[in-house]
Image (cartoon, rainbow, N blue to C red; front, side):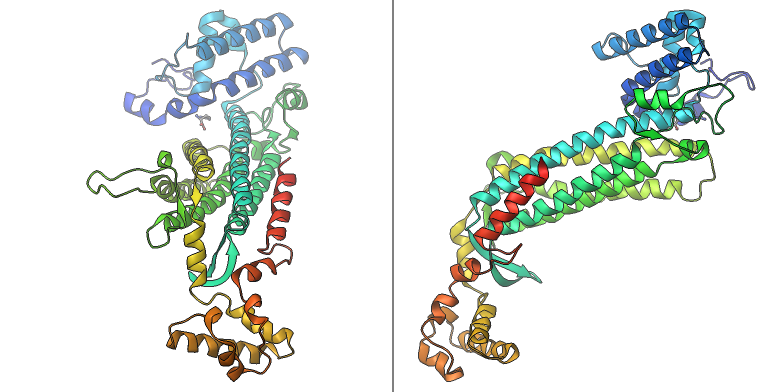
Length: 457
Ligand code: ARG
């Protein structure tokens, strides 16, 4: 196929080299950004008297037509082209003749691709953020419904202290709020326009980079042309933010998987978000959560792939950088798929209050509160801690729980014990008294829900 860049060479490359070199398979998804960028470029060239207004109008109308035809499916992208930039220019020239060849004045594919990727990822960030918000809403709604459902809180996966299911869920809402912050930060740094950096050194034409930046919704321009065409930090940064987000989804998935097991039976996922086994009729598998957990590894891989590609690259543009797109597109596609299934999976799950409470009643998770009871009666914490531990040991030996020990037994360990201890160590009291900010009491969880709701608007 004749190359647009034939000149220095005859452009007669081998088919296998063309296929290897080509990026149109994956950069075709940026056709809208590419065309919009070109329309603004043509307008800028006219404003600066680099092109006549007539030529610019013709180019803009031609580009508009291509955009329309691609949107409507009346034009198919030719996969034989090297990349989306070449394809659009080829169609334009085919439709307009020589005027089409004027579009690429004062521009290079190096700044063009940097522009397209930034614009594309900007809208990806907006889409991902909207999906994260939907998940946060699903979580806070669930937390509201279960703000008084007592369950064991764990450390080392050992029952530790009583908490509520609502409190536990709200921990994930907080993580996701930070993820939203990271996405917003990335967007801010990404939103600088590289167009006009040209191949690497800028241009001798009297261009107006601010005009293009402004018309394409950027906050400013990349201030060094070498950097503008070589910077892929924004891809790395976005994939880092997505990796952290996936890490959160993966931890949540792991708990959903555990909680769904017969060993826990704390929650039941809706049938719509589980699968059966082809051989074991009793199975109800949390496949969605497992896949999210699994795909987290894939997203980390995308991040590592690009970091490794960029490491050691000299300035300015190198073809290696074409590898940015598949990685970052895959990370965006994957996290969006995960979020789309995660939010309704959370929204439709039900918690088994009885089983959670049952689990909370075992494991002596009120032992801290028993120690605190003695502290409040004047005993130093370390001594109280010891007595509480001895009472737990006594219970284990006698196959009972703290709530069921008679007062006489308590009195053998300390004179400070009295009848009010039973209320003090009831799980409900343990939860209700944890009114510290961020704590597990219903009032504290309500505050957390309110905080998240306000952060979302
Ligand atoms: N397809 C290329 C990429 O994705 C576009 C830039 C090509 N530039 C070049 N000098 N060959 O990076």
